[in-house]
Image 1 (cartoon, rainbow, N blue to C red):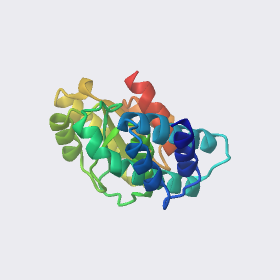
Image 2: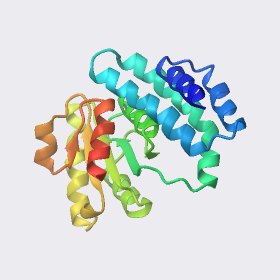
Image 3: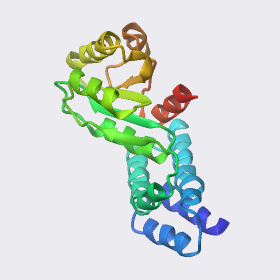
Image 4: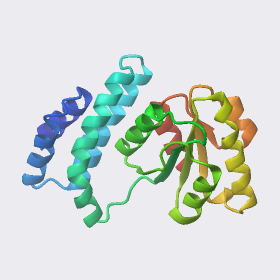
Length: 211
């Protein structure tokens, strides 16, 4: 069993997308619990990927292929995890703000967060404050994540937070923001709970916000 998990972890870390299904299916046929495969195989591997990125051993392309490999394995497990009612690490609503159509960074954040055990609800790009608020009101979101790549679209982040305050929903959700022009100082100035400069640190931030 341990050898199978080690092989699975290596498969994700090395981005061997064509082999991960075989590992997951073999583990299931051997009687391994889906939650063990998820936590000790896929999530453990993505934790290692995040550490390698932060230490400078991995770059965005390596992170991306590792995340895609993890998602390929996770697709097999999802129905089983839902059936077994396995608890997630939390629910995160993500979106790129109104006027901004960039989604590569957001998509990588979503994959890394999913690899860390979070349930992701991706609203896509060009998301106005009303859509973010509706998602918080209806979705039992633990965290709201907003992304912007253009300086001109950053004000939507503040508009959304102000609107959440006005709607009486601000204390129901943690807010994290990110994107190339975004800074820690800006996050503090608009009342966000945190800022992450990259996908790996978005995972660390999400975990710390919910702890």
